[in-house]
Amino acid sequence: MARLGKHRALGGGDAPTQEPVRAAADPALVVAIAESWLGTPYLHQASARGLGTDCLGLARGIWRDLHGSEPVTPPPYTRDWGESSGREVMWEAAQAFLIEIPMGAAAPGALILFRMVATSPAKHCGILVPGPADQLALIHARETTGVTREPFTLPWRRRAVAAFLFPG
Image (cartoon, rainbow, N blue to C red):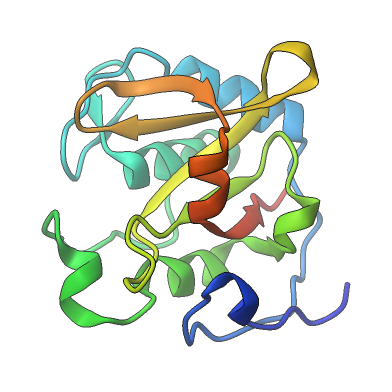
């Protein structure tokens, strides 16, 4: 797989690039794991299916179901962590452990990073899943709703800045 560059055209930050070295996990398995988190309440910094999670905790939980223990423990973070440093912390972490793919290649099973504010670093993530009528949907954890599935609408697509696959 070719080296992937920064997503400047999509407003990408200065996150480094790396060569993917492993095959991707089965997308259907990733989708099934994400679906098993539906209904989990929102709880900042948590990652416990059925008990509480935030968006990062959902991604961490999927990793654990695929691979066992997490490769690192994230440090404590505040709700505004993405704005405080200006660094692409979430993007850099995803590049260290996941396989980056072009946004145009994102399909069910892909982890998507979002910029909630165009000038700020990516600080939200979710999993693409099949939706109704051959549309895509998004499973993610939000403070107001917990883990839900919702259509991957134009407002979400406009905020999407990076796509990753979980390694197999």
